Amino acid sequence: MTALSQDLNDRLVSPNESGLDPALLVPLLRLLADGEPVAISDLARAAGRSVEATLAALAATPETEYDDEGHIVGQGLTLRPTRHRFTVDGEELYTWCALDTLIFPVVIDRAARIESTSPTSGGTVRVTATPTGVTAVEPATAVVSLVNPEDLTSIRSSFCNQVHYFTSAEDAQPWLNAHPGGEVLPVADAYRLATDLTATMLDRATAGTAPAPDATGKHHCC
Image (tube, rainbow, N blue to C red; front, side, top):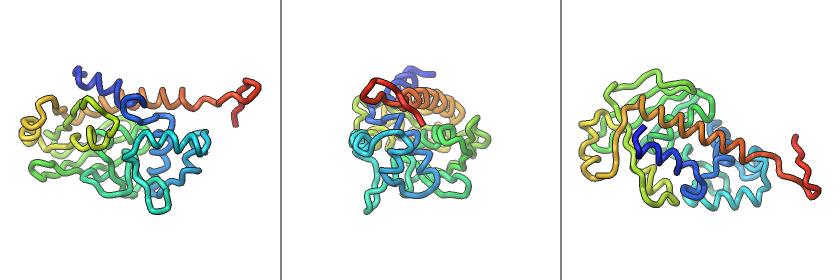
């Protein structure tokens, strides 16, 4: 893992850095993977939180997408089209960035077919990712770009919008020229970074969903 990758692993899953709360994000991703908008009350129930606490946590990620009824339609995984198509069990979804497509199969425990387009050449990259690995990459030379912005609070605009698939390192060179602090990784290496991120995310999600004590100081569950 490069220094940039290691630093991202620490920062992306820190609510203080990115605004993303793993204890809320993990159940949200699993709900969104069904292909329907998610009601705040349903997310609160899945996360084991009050609606008020859920709304407060969501406010830390202002780029979260909502429909006209106030239901969530996107946070990393989205129902709205992007350049990164993410198909799960025949349900056509999308993601905010290329790295998301490699993280989410592990989080939702479901395989995904990924189709993305290079922002430089317009070439198509196709990947099949499962909870345990990448089983297909076309073309085999495809790479994923990474950046490590100083400020991650607007994570979609500062990070996600610069994390792309390219058909090759050569295809990515114009992007690298424009982003001297960035780097590109082969898809297999990007998947390893994704699994490291996911392991940290799931650990923090589990720690963040422990039952809260009641007025007597006792914990209750289920």
